[in-house]
Image (cartoon, rainbow, N blue to C red; front, side, top):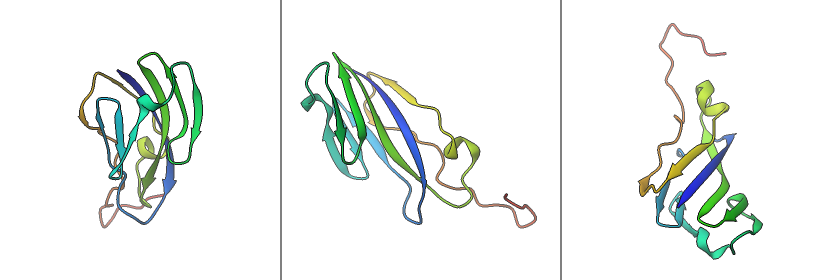
Length: 106
């Protein structure tokens, strides 16, 4: 299975987003979504995952990526994550960085 995960960054004061993939089940913040339930060739709007598409064993969806006030550029403007035959936790961009005492974050 191939999954393209588009990330939609959102500033939040909660825990970092967590994601994992096991077979066709994408788990985001402890909630599992079986992507294989979407028929082949279909596109659907999912309340939690945004637009989800399926073409054979290739899937694409969007996940909300929560970030803190000092999130790095890579978190605020993330590239899609492409996973091919992946099982386990998905490494997402950093939630936040703690600035040095002398450092000013703009």
